[in-house]
Image (cartoon, rainbow over all chains, first blue to last red; front, side, top):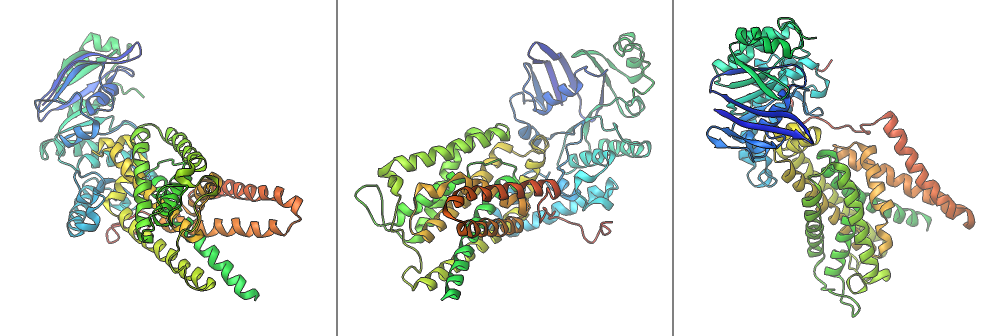
Length: 257
Length: 319
């Protein structure tokens, strides 16, 4: 579904991502782990189109998307979330979701005047969908709050919710568990599993919470210093001595704080 | 009679408030909703004013145009002209961070002002353009003033209504999303650069319309009228005080700031001549002080932005 070939992302002389070749199959939940500064988020930015890679190609559903803008990749079904929540802080939670669906007729400057019946009809559908997504995420009680007022964990759920407002095929989740309390975390895992199994989403998941990785991800890819160190089943990756070394002696079963 | 003078003064103020209200609404589209830092409002105002004047005024041997077209054509031309000027500026500057746009728009506004002052064949130079027709201009003075005041208010209400509809539509929601978080908006499939350009051009057209309303009210225009202090800075304060992101706030801000601005002129004019020139700066100081106070105590303005989409039947009332 997604093939990365020889991706290099250099900032000046520093190679944040240094020749990553990786492929993701449809239906997978691929876990991307590695110590801080391994280049995971930079790789996400390259896949999502926020950065143009210094070298390498990205193929998505058989098509070369290396030169496409972020918004064009979104329309192909490639959707991302952010490590630090990027909510639309002055919009309500409901509006944050309603913004997302692509090709809304009401986004045309003139349709609102000349095709308003259709605008209104689509708007009602979008609202219903947003209400359903809020119910799924158990965020209905904060629907009318400003998104900027949500807690960190709720913002994470909202980020996930935005990916549900479009026909996403591949979703990039950047540390969905960071800053989320234990109860919410279990809920989040459950939601991701439902989206994977029932909605047919493919995921790439960056996460430091190894419990979550163990539970959800197959396969697991470990990066260090901009390169793919190893990949495979979670237990194999965890027990790989190079991975242990990359984490500088930290035992990976313990959660890095 | 004193009361007639007072009524005339009130009509004059009301008309100016209407014109500044439209300017503030234009800025609200650009800054309040889309987050575009336009520091060259005076430029778009000037383009609208001069273009409408040239389209409708009688010809003069010293300058171009003077086509004596109907006033409505002048207004539409003013909007189109301001939009046309905004388009290339937006194309070049909107991909950069907002501070670049601010610098570029200041620069363009100054260029426009200097060209209008020096290019006599275009603008009549320092003497400006006179003999600009005014709708209802043939009526007796007070009546004519009042009729034009009513017209300006009608236009203000129309612009308000149209923008209110536009900004509560998905279009406005998308612009607010781009304002709140550009990266996330792009990640949610919005073409940030193109959408910003739409908003910038629309706002500029509204500012051009305000310029046209002004020139037909004054029946003449000179380069002094497009002083950035009044036509740019004052409009910014109106929007910030009233509440950026809120159309009613923009209009409320225009009312309050214009009242302070012209009332304080009233007072400084009563002072002896040698103090009066210095006292003019006190007015600027007052406005600046006001800005400080708003930003300190009510940063969202008197009427903060409201969210549009609610699920009133689903969610419990705010606690």
